[in-house]
Amino acid sequence: MKRFTGVFAPIPTPFDANEEVAYPQLKENLARWARTRLAGLVVFGSNGESVLLDAEEKERLIAFVREHFPSDRPVIAGTGAESTRETIRLTRRAAELGASAALVLNPTYYKGSMNEEVLARFFLDVAEASPIPVMIYNMPRNTGINLPASLVVRLASHPNIVGVKDSGGDITQIAEIVAGAPADFAVFAGSASFLLPTIVVGGVGGTLAAANVIPDLCAEIVELAQAGRIAEARELQLRILAVNKAVTASWGVAGLKAALDLIGYYGGPPRRPLQPLGEAAREELRQILRAVGALEAGS
Image 1: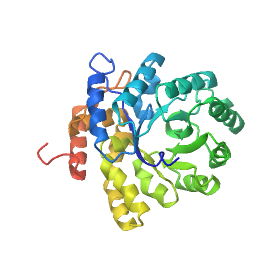
Image 2: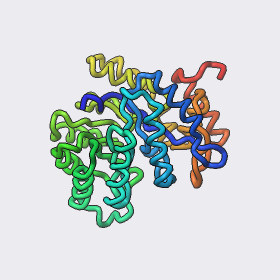
Image 3: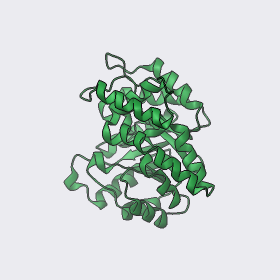
């Protein structure tokens, strides 16, 4: 469990102009992220456009990221699917390809049937079948389903369910999970917008879109907070809010990829139907990145 702490970047999947995965550019991105204070990476968080990839692409990407990122830092693979059967299949395959843990998003299509008992059975079945640790992924903005604290605490008692990435933004719910789960259950902020509050109530890190762009600033917030230097951590938390909003709520995957392009990584275009960021928004994004120090003044 000590491996699953700190700041993780849920990396985007880079595509070329033909919408094929751009592996050479991904390799360069991985080398740059390896030189930061990131604790590890997540392949196929919401930023990874996993719903737009086929099974073969997913498997190759997991293997590629694991091969080209330092072996002493974990790579977590998003393996959630609509069926329990496919989730288990991809989780087992991710384990074979070297993933350190599986980040499992709940099924979403049959929302009316996804009551707490059905969701509990889904996660428990996956955990029982998985050869690697399982982390719960709560992303109500995309799924339309919030996984309540009562469910997460219940699942936290399973020995192979080791943590949660909560992207809901309800700090009361996050605090309730910390209070009710075992002490070694890893609670991660799912957004940089509430990273510091999560650490203050007992979380252990964050899996953050903004960490792709400003990884060291995000890591420093966690380090300062854990050292009790709350005033300094608060200053940084407030400083990164505009960047986080730009690459999440405002412009999403397109904004994140444009930000990477602007700071010298490869972002590239999203895969359709998602559309790239327009020029006006890109210029606004440039100013936001410059203000936080992610871009030189003349860039």
